Image (cartoon, rainbow, N blue to C red; front, side, top):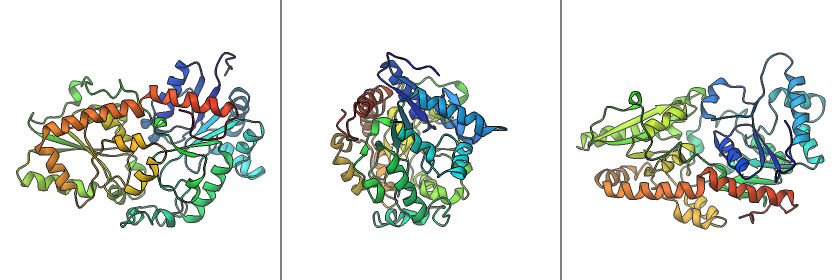
Amino acid sequence: MTARSDAPGRVLYVGQAYYNAWYLSRALRGLGWKADVLNWDPHPEAQIYFHGEDFRLEYGRFNVPRHLRFYLRAARNYDIFHFSNAHAMRFGNPLHDWVARRFREGDEIRLLKRLGKKIVYTNNGCLDGVSQTSFAEWGERPVCSDCPWREMPSVCSDERNLAWGRFRNEMSDFQVLLGGNRADYNLDGRIHEVPEFYCLDPDFWHPDLMLPANYRLPFAEDTVTIYHAVGNASSRSQPRTFRNLKSTHVYLPLIEQLKQAGHKVELIFFQDVPNRELRFYQAQADIVVDMLTYGFFGAGVREGMMLGKPVVCYLRPEWLEQMRAEIPDYADELPIVSATPETVRDVLVDLIEHPEKRREIGRRSREFALKWHSAEAAGRRFDAIYRGLLAGEPGTNDFR
């Protein structure tokens, strides 16, 4: 690793966040930054969600000495460290555990702070700094009741989530969030709605994507195809319950009911397919459907919008209002059709019966994704955010 003296700054993304950090880092390189991605994820099954890396921490004998050498070189060669993993602000597990045994847990991150490095963190999901008790209070239907991790304190509990929130907030100079969930440690003034981090390559997910013959689905031209997917299902301890979170238990019987009612529809359903391949199936969908109880959306919906598809997903009104305080244009322009388990049938029938409406929403979806979730937009936004941090500005959201 060699530093560039002419770069605006030097940032290392420590840990993968799907493909977001990869595309953001490439965009920043185009603006002159030294921007690299470290993959320390030890799980082979997770690699299907990543699109690239500059460094990978290998696991085997002599883990700690090798990882410690990388950490020390990184501390010398980068100004900003951007982490993206809940409960895992670390340079891999072996070094983290070694430091915890000999000093205090997290002291390798505290050392970066003492060296004057800037720490940025991307928030990830319901358990990131918010207690289970607080999260269960959102809305009339507690989504926690559907979650397989509700009774697994090693994954999610009030004590664990709040302890992580305290440490995360102590370390971070700036935190990235999207989707509200403002409670407990997510009320910190350094946490901001920054949709641009969750970025995609608009050419990789293009509405006119060329389809390889072996990925073409055998549906008639007048069939309305409805796409639904579950990611990480194979790694969940209770995948059937997890499908309830993704609302698969609603969509599977609903599609059959629509068929029986005379609608010519088919479900495109996948789980644990690499997103490099999944896009070929997404591109053949007329409608993309996602979670109906959680209250927001993730990577699959952003991919659907970038492909120019109309998307159905529940948008929690409280979270939209929280987002509107910082990014009113995002909240107002969001083209997703909100639905609940009680309303989704009518929503789908309306879209099935009105192809012109699908096309119009799909057009707005692509425009929205290009504006807010393209790698180019992310590069511009983080060029400003990182420059502000390096200039000693407080961790505010005024870097537009």
